[in-house]
Image (cartoon, rainbow, N blue to C red):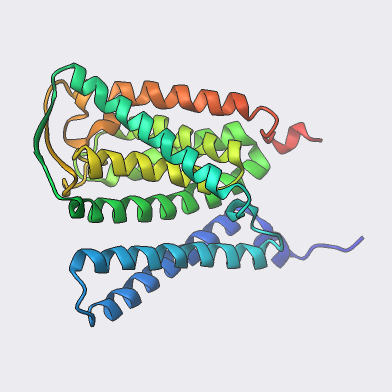
Length: 286
């Protein structure tokens, strides 16, 4: 039997794979952003369109870096970015994200806390659209593609879900206007939902689509604050008032009780449909 060297053990260790994968993707994203930004500044394009193109380039760069790195490192096909069923997962994921965000806002509307101040030109959605798909692709690759996937291999789907939900919520604590409660909300609703979506589809297109649609509808259509960040332009200029429990306050609708309820229900449905796709801890497979 061929013995495994210490070097191979270190390289195959889950934490090593996670750290190296994160570094590769971060570097690819930063380099693509910088290069694309400098080149696009030489053009006469409007700033919004330059940002849109920069977002597309950096997103493609991260997907390419992830696919190339793990294909070589793990010596396997990158099925999580397979073209098989891509249309179905993107459309379905987008509809789910749209529905969940719309239901969340509907509760605010029913509580008389949502006022439309103005309807803006379609061009107003360019920035929130760019931010939504760039953030969705980058975060899903890092959290679900790298951290969740590698932890799941050893500790199983459920433990990986809890760990990555905690990580995802904790990362949002660094956002402006965040609180422990808002971080908890993001961890429960988005951490579990995106993880369940990955388990169900066994590709990243599905959680990316849900993540994108959720964020885009929130800021690009309903004009709400997203994850505590500064309000951007959107199709609607709105005023959201009322109890923080229902509106999310300065953090936005993600920090609401209804968002948790709707997203947890969706997560449980996806997990129920994924019962034959669950991975169990390594000690249960012995």
